[in-house]
Amino acid sequence: MYLVSYDISSNKRRNKIAKCLENYGKRIQYSVFECNIDEKRFQKLYSEIAKECGDMPDGSVRFYYICQNCKPKMRLIGVEKPGVFNDSDDVIVI
Image 1: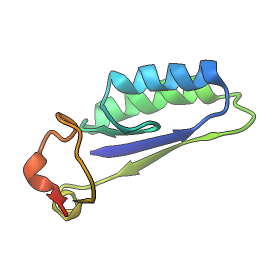
Image 2 (image 1 turned 180 degrees about the vertical axis):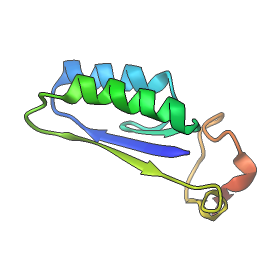
Image 3 (image 1 turned 135 degrees about the vertical axis):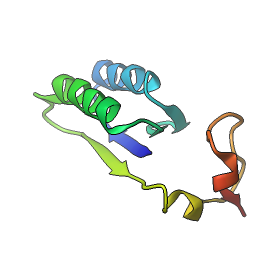
Image 4 (image 1 turned 90 degrees about the horizontal axis):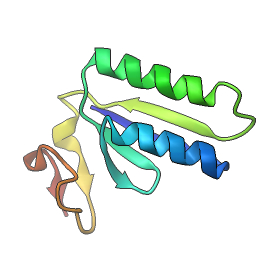
């Protein structure tokens, strides 16, 4: 699984990035997506985002890989949005 977050000031670019990410994962917060994808799909996603952000003067997009061994260690405080996690058994709600 990949956790992708972005901080982009341009509305047009931010909307394009969000739309792209919606094709690969689920939005868990306004600018954070969880993408349960394999390495090949990740490379495609990364390439699409890099192409869109190539000349970006400010802002950033971050990609974090979360391995299968780490997923069961995820914790959530608060209310989980329905359908956000594919493996809801892996998330402990406190």
